[in-house]
Image (cartoon, rainbow, N blue to C red):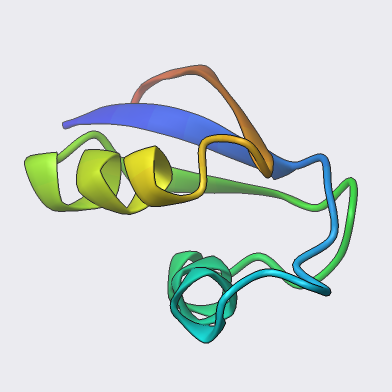
Length: 63
């Protein structure tokens, strides 16, 4: 399955609780932290909610 890399670029402090929970749900812990996730509609929806806090790039395919 195709993967995407999600990098946190801004803090969740001062954002609504839903945004902080979304950051936690994606597995991000701190600014500069990057995680690889499957490219699914559910993950894309989570990214859309916090698009101002993260940076997204193509992570490649899993072998």
